Image (cartoon, rainbow, N blue to C red; front, side, top):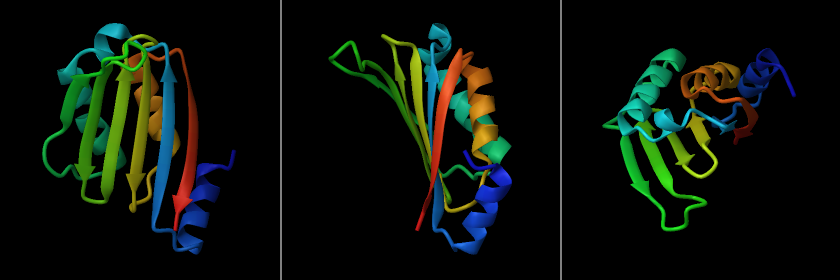
Amino acid sequence: MESVADLQQRYETTDAWGLATQLDLHTCDASTIRDAEKIKQFVRELCDLIGMKRFGDTVVVDFGEDERVAGFSMTQLIETSLISGHFANQSNNVYLDIFSCKFYDPNVVAEFAKKFFQAQNFNIAWVLRK
């Protein structure tokens, strides 16, 4: 996977419109991912960490008829786009998407999220949007 320095250079030289990061966190702390206030705290702290200005309140909704996908879903508008996530009760996995037209370091997001949700491990992918 390319380094963050290379990613940022490519972001700047290709005049990318934005950066999208997909982060899958595995086997997280069950009590944290089932707590709407903790999820909101995570969003606030993440936005501060990566320099994103929140627009409006974090929306956290618990739903899902199928136990495989039941859990909280979260959305947070940011001035440069959107952060969203789903928190799966059955697997204790977290699926986050961060999209912004302002550059940020995807690895900082991953390490912070891994620590906050006490994930055993994670998968990460990013793409430049043009």
